[in-house]
Amino acid sequence: MTQYLVGIDIGGTKLATVVADNNGTILHKVRQPTEARYGSDHVVRKLIQMVDQMLALVGISRSQISAIGISCGGPLDTTTGIVYSPPNLPDWDAVPLKKIVTTEFQVPTVIENDANASAYAEWKFGGGQGYDEVVFMTMSTGIGAGIVSKGQIYHGASDCAGEVGHQILIPNGPLCGCGNRGCLEAICSGPAIARRAQEAIQKQPETEMLKLAGGKILAVKSEHVVAAAQNGDLLALDLIHQTAFYMGWGIANLVNIVNPEVVLIGTVAVAAGDLLLDPIRRTVQQMAMTRPAQTVRILPAKLGDRIGDLASISLVI
Image 1 (cartoon, rainbow, N blue to C red):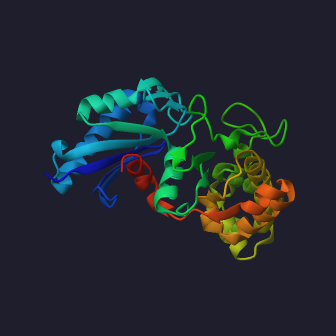
Image 2 (spheres, rainbow, N blue to C red):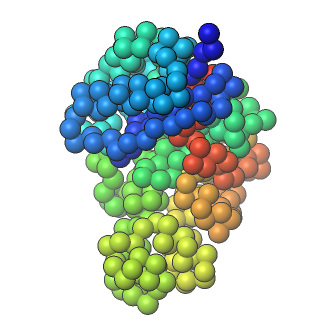
């Protein structure tokens, strides 16, 4: 009987389940809204239904599943499989997710922080191939990092390694979701870029960003900033350069501590390309210590939209 792998990706706004063959080739995917406001029991029931729906669509039985990988926002315990109150999943207080899924499907289940799982997927399938020391950074709703060293995810003492988005760069700066002020995430995440753009547009409304957002300041998002900057909009370019400075500062700290061969940056950095990456690289060269700065390459992540699917599957392949 042919065996298959199942991947589950749990986000604050979207859930995704995928089924793959043993080489990691994605055969089918189901995506639905998380509906996190209804609590953890609702979301977990929905995930189980999504897996069954997906298997039915491709004609695979539960008995043909050999393992399940779960990628979920932390904090979580990879050993016990308990998820502890992720900021984007209200009411998820000590949810024994691994136990629930293992009991339901009767197969080995692996659970991992989403940034770590993404880092592992980039190392295995994407831009980290061929490197021993890899850091992958998310740059979307939040900023986090996964660290892969010699083929192993680095977890730290309590599975909290890689929370680079919560290094404080501006004391008493913008409020962060973690409760502190001036974190890298509060300055350079997608929503933070959008917030800074909206504030800037109120003072300088003659900008392509506003046109791209349909003339509504509160509709301006990070993708409008990137698109306008790529078209030479001066205000958008200034926002990109500010973002690059703080991202470069945060990455320079990371480079000094971890000494990676490559830092792969996803989402906003992929969309912006060298417009954002070149000033990040310059800042890292200026701020990081000489030897680690000379060693590291800073590149866009390669997996793009596939990373959410491959992150969970990479854990069990």
